[in-house]
Amino acid sequence: MKVSAKLNNLRVAPRKVRIVAKLVKGMAINDAFDQLDIHIRKTAPYMKKLLESAIANGENNFGIDKDNMFISDVVVDAGPTLKRWRARAFGRAGKILKRTSKIELVISERVEGKGRKTKEEIEKEKQAKIEAQKKVVKEREKADKKATETNKVIKADSTRIVKKDTEKEGRKGDEKSWKNKIFRRKSM
Image (cartoon, rainbow, N blue to C red; front, side, top):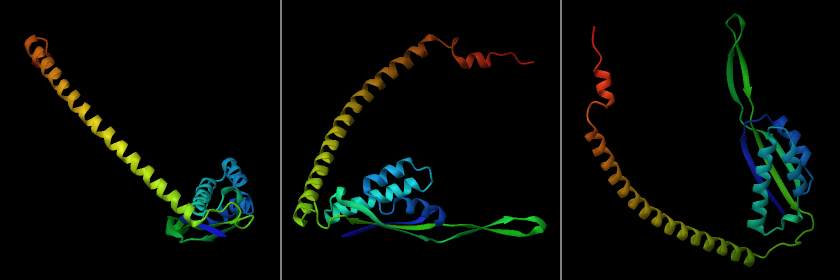
């Protein structure tokens, strides 16, 4: 079974993307990750993210085992080109072409059907994930309620403290306030 993932409008020229694409084509998933981790080209992190997306598509939508996957094909095409102008000598203008790329990464199984999950198993896993997410949301709501209650108590205590501090400052007298120091200066 073949599973694909696409990346459109990547702001890197297609010929630069093809260098990394040729590197990982035909590799096993783990080897491709290792190569993309150490590769210094600008497109390596984008290819890695695209590879993760393709793996997630295969695992979640079709139940394919991650250990049984390999990159069967990587297609890199030119996307829309952004046209810009630059001032040149004698009042002329020079064209600047900022090229973009479209990448399609296709993953296949080495041994057809090995370790693949059935549709029922995939549905059960999805339901379990949904229930786990609901549980996490409920716990967060409880924690937020507790936090707001404690914040109310802290705010009430802090307002009392602030009021006491301002009362003390007012009693100290006007001689030590910074306003008096400024306006006490003699004019010429």
